[in-house]
Image 1: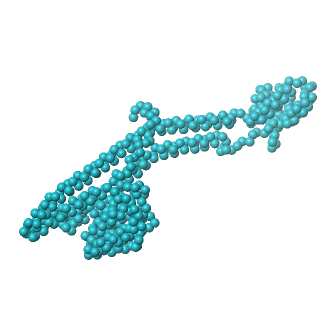
Image 2 (image 1 turned 30 degrees about the horizontal axis):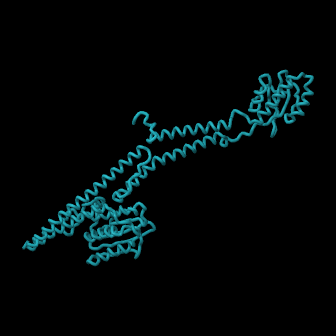
Image 3 (image 1 turned 45 degrees about the vertical axis):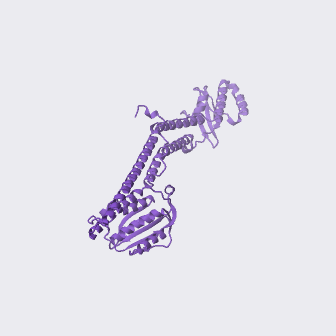
Length: 445
C-alpha cells in the first residue's frame, strides 16, 4: 500500500478513514452545539436578575447613613416587596461562612468580598438568606430557591451522548452494509454461475476500488471458464462426429466376417464405443441449461418412467400420490430419474420409485434390492466415470459411470440435493430433494 494511500476515497481504507473522521466531527459538533444551548456555567436569567437586585439593595443600604436606613428600608419594601427585606439584630449570623450552593455563591459574587452571605433556612418556594454589611449591620431577604436539578439521565449531556451514539451507530451500519453488500453479491453470483452453467448476468462493477477490481477479475474468470467449457464440448463433439464415420465403416466391414461369433463380438465392441461417445457427450452437454422452468406434474413424470421400464419387462413399481405439482425442468427431471432407474435395475432385480411432497419440498426415492454401496464409496460414486463394480469388465451390461453424475448435476441445477442411503435389509436408496418453488434466478436460467 502506498504511503498516504488511505487518503484515496475510492478505496476501502479511504472510505473507512473518511467515515471515522466524519463521525468524530459530527460528535464534536453535537457536543459543542449542546454546550452553547445549555450553558452549565450560567444560571437562569430570572435568578441572576433577582440576585443583582438584592445585591444593589444591600449596597444601597451600606452606602446610606445609619440614621436614614429605617426610611430606606420602607422605600425598598414598597419598591421590591418580593425581596421581603428586614433588618436583623446583631449577632444573628452563624460563625461559619455558609456560602454553599449556586444561589449563595452567585449572590456573593454580585456583592463582593466585603459582604458576608449566609443561609437562614428555606421553605418550598423561597429561601431566606442573611447578608452582613461591611459595617456589621445585617439584613435578611428572600431569594428564589435552588433551581430544580433534573436527573442525570434526563440532562442535556446524556441526550448528547445518546444522540452521538445513535448517529455513529447508523453511520457504522450504513458503512458495513455498503462495504459488505458487494461481497454478498459475489457469493450469490458464484452460486448462480455453478448452478446455471455460466448463464447468469455478470457481476456489477461498483463500490470501492478494491471491490470493483475483484468484480472485474471474477467476470474475466467467469468468461474464461465459460469459454473453456464451450471449447471442451465443441472439441469432444467434433471428435465424436469424426469417430462415428470410421465406426460405421467398421460395422459395414464386420458384415463380411464369416465367423458369426467373431462378427458378433466385433459388433458388440463397436456398439459399446458408440454408446460411450454418446454418454460422454450427454454428460458434457448437461452444463448447458437451456430448458426453462415450468410447473409440472412430477407424479405423472414418475409414473411415465415406471410404465416405460415395465413395458420392456422390468420389475418396477411406483408409490406416491397421483398428482404432485412442482416447478422443474421436465425433460431434465425425466432424464435424471431414467438414469437412476437404469442403475437400479442393472444392479438389482426390482426397483421402486417413491414420491413424497410437502409444502416446500419434493422428495423422490429410487430404491433397489441390489448389493448397495459402502459408506466409504458413496461420495466417490457421485463423481463422473466411476462405476459401481470395479471388478466387472466393461460389457453390454456395464455403464460408463455417468448416470449418477448426470442425475446429480441436474438436481443441483434445480437447487436440490441428491444423496445415497442404505436400504434394509440390502440395497440402495437414491434420494432426490427438490424445492417446490424455484428461485427467480433459477427460473430465469
